[in-house]
Structures are given as C-alpha cells and as structure tokens.
Image 1: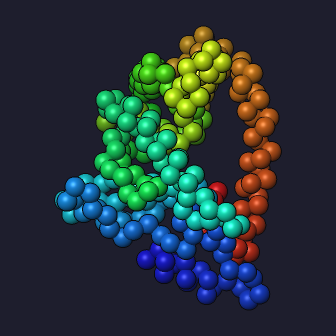
Image 2: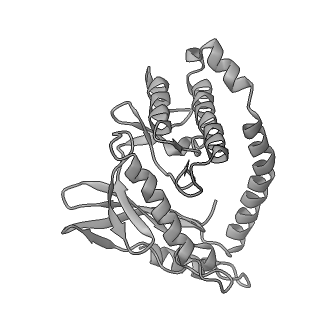
Length: 269
C-alpha cells in the first residue's frame, strides 16, 4: 500500500518536476516489511508513522490485537556513501537505553530485533501531550519522578522538549518513547567531564518537564518551579540559539522539496 502511494505520487507530480528524492528516506525506495515474525508470533504492518532521513517507524499488530512499534535505522546510501553502519550503531545504541530501563513500567519493553538496524517495542496505549488534551492531576509529578528514576541509572533522556515523545497513557500515567539521542556514561567513559555533562543534560530534562507543566497545567507550578522555567540555564539558551535557525531552514527546505515533488510527503519534517 505504501509503495502504491509512492508510485501514485510519482504519476501525479506536475510535468517537468524531478521525481522524489528517495535518498532522503532511511530505506530508500523500500518500505517497512508487510509482516515480521518474532518468537513464532507474526506481526502485520498497519501504518507507517514517519519515514525520514535516519529512521522509519511504523505500527504493527498481531491477529489477537496486540500492537507494537517497529523502528528501523538507515540502510540507504547517500551521495555514494554507505550509511547502514550508522543505522546499525543508532539501533544498538537506542536499544541499550530501552534495555537499561526495562524494569520501569513507563518505558515500553523491547520485543525483538528486526534485520540489522531495527527493533520492535511494545505499543503504549495513549496519546502524546497536546494543548487540547486534558492532563490529569498528578501527571507531571509522576513524570518528574520518572525522569529521576532514569537519572538514577546515570542516563539523561535529552529529548523531553518534544511533547510527542511524552505519552499520556490510557492509564493516566506518563510514558516515554524515543531514546535515540539519550546520553549516558557508556560510550565516552565515566570521567569528571562526562559526569558534569550528564548532570547538565539531566537538569535540562527537568526543565522541559516543568516547561510542559507550565504550558498545560500552569496553576500547578510552585514558585520554585516557575523560577526554574523562567530562568533558563546556559545550556538551554545555547541550544535554542544554535538550533532555532537550523530548524527554520530545515523546515522551509523540506517544505519546498515536498511541494516540488522531490521529496515524498511522509519524508523528513
């Protein structure tokens, strides 16, 4: 179905426009597998959520209604350079965080690996944080405790600024997904400099939790929490100065590429 949609997009593009840049997709012209089998359980593809440069994620379901999420890292070369080794690295790296947090019920467990760059994890019944979605009492207290549980394992989540990574479960509790850019002391060693950097990142995690709390439940902020949110640390300020122009350029570039037919609609955002 996804391949048919891609072909239909090719045929419908305006005359004279170049075909979609499949090199901008993690799997190139390929799509997620229709079915995967792990431990004698068959999972069928139901929908592709996002297919961008570094990874593609999609939803799967078993015959008895169990659901899961497949994330596959990049396998497609880019400008003649093979990048599958990066896809393998990112897959192993993210799985390490999921494994380290396996005993925490607010982090979905890994079900198994798929190919050399993919892994399947359990689906969280719930929805991402959103302005129009009511947040129950105690949610942000639970989310802050969850962050502290992660920090106690010498891990910084790092990506809490994105509300789509924080799920409001049907159980009313917070759940975290997407540990692609998380940080720990594993790769570069347990040095004083890395410990300092880890603490700065963990501080940013809490800042972003309180930022979401201010946006969605401002009446629950304490005076101390309000002061933390309104007095951004140097790391937060530097991050915004560096990334804001990049994000604007990136979004406008991909918008033009999608409009011109050089990038498929579900490509990088």
